[in-house]
Every structure is written in structure tokens, then in C-alpha cells.
Length: 242
Image 1 (cartoon, rainbow, N blue to C red):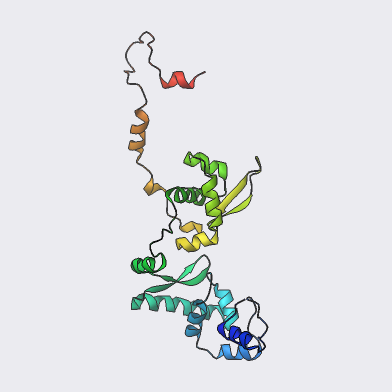
Image 2 (tube, one colour; image 1 turned 120 degrees about the vertical axis):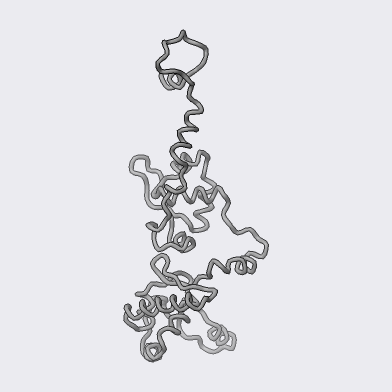
């Protein structure tokens, strides 16, 4: 529920303030009639200008009293119009709903205004931890630490506080809490679903590079040469065998 400036003014003047309307309630009576008379596209723009999270087509259709198909068509047309006109903002379908976003090309102007010299980005450790959760979810905290090779408890708490990850049940074998990403994560990343996460393969090292790194720790020898007497050098076999 929201309180507008008119309500605040009425309260300050001692006048009665109308009872709040629940967020999920559809317009009724005179309000419904007035809403139905509005032109659809400007009405959608007005509503989307004040949403706190992506709004679904079902919710918008219910609020505006229009068929969902008409609402969906109007939203896509608006998005195309903004792109064609080169506007500084875009209307995107993200995390199951529609919301206005600034275009990446204008990010320097937005960062200059919003950040004002403050560092608001995630640290490298937080980004790496978030990537592990995103690609391996549901995953336990200990598993994340094992993948990264360092303790991630503090970083995980930060990601939880920022609403990027959430608890999602427990591991049957150990009872450890499992974590996954949130809709807010999808929203911030500009994704409709986890299926749109980029493939990892292009970012992995080539097989030759991995083999070369692995071979650095192996002893050089001729497989056809006769066995030599034992030496003081230590091989991988002697390490791995009991």
C-alpha cells in the first residue's frame, strides 16, 4: 500500500484520509470505470513508473481492468517504441514482470548521479561467490567454500543481506542449509530466468592449457627406458599410494 502526497496533506489539515486500498485489490465502482476510460499505453507507463519490482502482465491487467493479451501487446509495443526512438530508458521483461530500466549506454550519467563518488559494487570475492551459487544452486555454504578454496561465511552473509541469495531448504545427507539466487538477482542481472545465464564453456581455459599446467608437476622420463635404481626424487605415484 502507498500513501500519496494528497493523503499526507489531508492528514496535516485534519481532514479524513480515505482508507488504504490493498496492493492486490482490483479497482471497483467509480475507480474501475475511470480506469477503464484511460488510454492503455499511458496508463501502463504511469503504473510502471511507480512500481518497486517488476509487474506481471496478470497484475497489470487486473489493476487496469483490461485483457491480459491486450496488456502484453501494449507493453511490447511500448518497448519497441522506446528502442526505435533511442530513449535513455528501456521497458524490459525481467524476472517474470515488466519494469523500466536505464539503457547501458547511459550508465556513466546514472552512476555519476547515484553513486556520487561512493563505491557501490560488489567486491571480487562477492562476485565469485555469487557466481558459484548461481551456477551450482542449490548449494551449501561449505560447498561454495570448497569451490573457491577459501571460507565464504562472511561473503555469504553479505549476499544474503543484499537480497541476492536466499535459503532454499536443507541437504538430506548432512542437514546443511542450501542456498540459491533470488528474483532480485535476476532483476539486477537483467535475466528472465536462470536459463539465460551465459554458458561457462567460453570462459574455461583450453584443454591444452590445463594439461600443460598439470604436466608441470610430473617428472620427465622415457617410458621405453629400463628401470633405474630408486632415487631421492618423489613422484606423484609415491604421494598418492599408501
